[in-house]
Image (cartoon, rainbow, N blue to C red):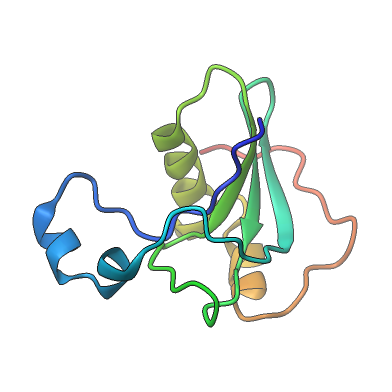
Amino acid sequence: MNNFYVNCLHVNHDEEIADDSLIYQTFKSGKKISVGIMALIIVPYKTVIGICFPDQATQKIDDKCPNLTIAVNEFFANQSKQVLEKSCLTNNSCFGENYKILKQGYKVKAGKEILKGSI
């Protein structure tokens, strides 16, 4: 993969979202931003997704779970989004507590692994 990007806004072909969004109206494709990957979600043989929280001063982001898809194999972008939401945002999810810690700006203990999780 050589076309890395962080979704800034999910419009899903909804013109009202686009019309009402300052992010959409001022968006410039190809803008370079610094992204630090705080954790990885790996779905074996399918995808590797980096959890990130880009600096909002550089680029405003309106996404429930900002991420950078690092690798894919027979996996689509909407499937990665579903994996993220189920892994990070669902109550009692396999990665939910760690995601909350990262989102608050703290770090999870280095080397911490969740070997199995169901989504």
